[in-house]
Length: 520
Image 1 (tube, helix red, strand yellow):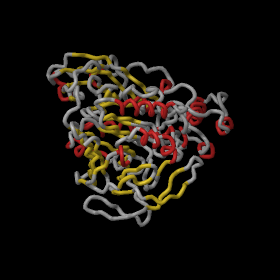
Image 2 (image 1 turned 45 degrees about the vertical axis):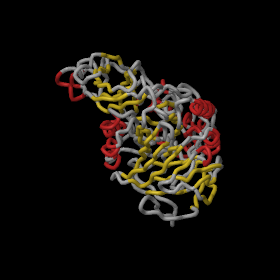
Image 3 (image 1 turned 120 degrees about the vertical axis):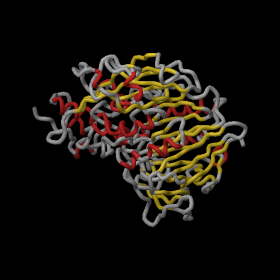
Image 4 (image 1 turned 90 degrees about the vertical axis):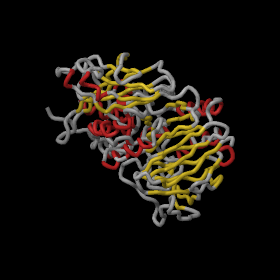
């Protein structure tokens, strides 16, 4: 049987939303062309996130279990995520190469005593092949919800299925551990962050450096594995679902013990699986269900760890640069954001609010700044005095001064401190997670710790709703670095709470540091 062409004609793709691309691919690959014509797609009759969400991922019933005995099917790609309450909830996820019967997690307080058994859910993804290049792909992801855990406790766990029990003597090497958040804010803890990782030697080199920070959790600001290499919300010709298999194996040394909290980048929209493009993400990750719609916006959620409230957003919903999902939530995400920031600011134990998402509000590198993010969300960050915003998208490290009303509210040189109540918010682009690096505008040099280059202004641009580039000369670009890097943030509680933010190169060398202070 001929494998159908998985592509979308470029003429159509330039005018198609993610929902339109989804319908076009479904019609083309199922040969049910009477559902919708190419002309209807191009004219915009199917717009927004209409239709069913990620429940349609795979487009067929769950597969029959494999004929291979479970004893020869080995789990891989373990990755953790918090539930809505990191003190008592953990989500354990993994992948199996074939469908299995009765998947489960065993969990206990000692590695040699995994007494509790929790049933898990198998989610199947089917990806059709591309004529002459790739066969069809079936993938199986498994998720278990661990609730009612003790705060501040180390647990040991092993994943299994019928025929494969991690508690058996021959499987002890498959047992790993995690730690729940403490009941009350600790004196201090560390979390790490980056975006734009992909699958490569440079991406894998992050693992040991991240682990040396002993992070309580890791924030991934989107563009996770690049199975969709174009990222333009357009042509699906080059989509390769097997990149996810490689990615989860690559990330497992960290993600099996450190909650790996991802959000959604432009490369993470995958049109085949659902009208909003997020069916694949829903199948592969089990994230907190604290967002406005966990099924159709899995990368939107909030959680509190210690004295830090963390908010994850999907910037595809507001992006002017890549508008395939522009307006997808119908404003629900922004309303949820306003409400959630208000609740976090009012919470007695929350000193700091950190927001992370993909597209940049303030950057001078290749993609520059997204006017949609500025229009929809920056006013909310100002109103609620957000302490730190972390982005990816541009494959560099760039950090602003404190930004207030679009201008420098306070210069924040390397090693300085700032108070968002008075000065504004610092925005960090941490897109050096492993994918091919970008640069800065011509004539603009890197400027980082030990290599400071004073510069009063940088010529850049911001994307407009009409997808034009509006030129601007900015004074807020403080630190710039074109190597692989990530953030390590130490949150300190007590009488003088502060965020001690450091940027580290892949070598472990510090390239930037500053402090955010409140009340001290």
